[in-house]
Length: 402
Image (cartoon, rainbow, N blue to C red; front, side, top):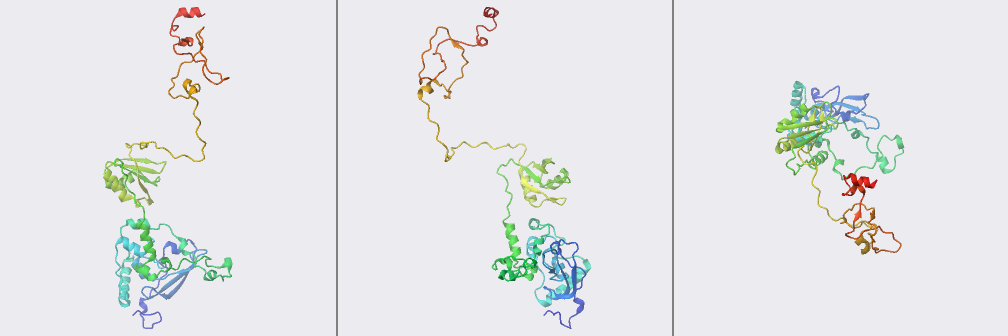
């Protein structure tokens, strides 16, 4: 059975003292002039029940006071923050990290065995000066997708005011707690346990993140087998062509790399389709060059057609509210095509006048309508002088005309 804080027979050499806590950036807050309250042996560790030095501080304005929950030995064993118990490197729950790295929890659950394990582990950490947990592990694809790279200060907000929920809060704007309605009590995120989070068992936050990772979209290859180009976006001036070549050469032979500096992207063209598929599968959502995460998509090769053939025209549904179509003109107008309504009309040269002495028959049509003079078939028509084949190139005709 573990010893308590008030036991006189406890060996005080096992009690932990420290000058500064092990915290993540989110719990530490964004205030550079933060003041901490330090209390030696102020509380028992939630995991090993040993007294340790407790730190208490306010991470920022309109945020709640936070304190350390576990001792530094337990935090170093799992490489987690002493307050939120999230991984220090990725900012993820222990259950997600252990599932991604396929790590097993070897910490004993009984009181006596856990105390003996913590003493041996503390001695080993004192020699190495580091942490056991996920330190030195190779980066994982799942961790790279779910990792939080920036601090999430919203997690430090004040608690909900219980008096405001009951309608009895009289502080108004001076109340240090949030005036919001609580979440559904049946929500799994509302019931979290520190020990479950530390050991990575039945953690609702971890289960939510794992489900989100399973539902993430995947980049499927295009059906056109001639596409062997990979699009790389998010480049800056520090990333050169050689940097991309050093990363993508492992997937196969590279035909060429086209850098578009103005748009901040590049097109990596492979010689084979299998090489491009391996490159997309190996670099999608996990390619980082010089500390910058790059975007990977499928591109189009230079020899591929620029656009797909147009589909066959199909009738469109009528649009309601439009006026009806124009009525069909009378047959006599279509026969002579006075207004250019016939589609099979052959353009004719312009006419000046009919031959002298020829009488053109009257054309049918409504009275008072002036119609153009159209000679009957076989009638000789005088064209412009420049269009008369008998007068082209003849000096005699020119003299007579003058």
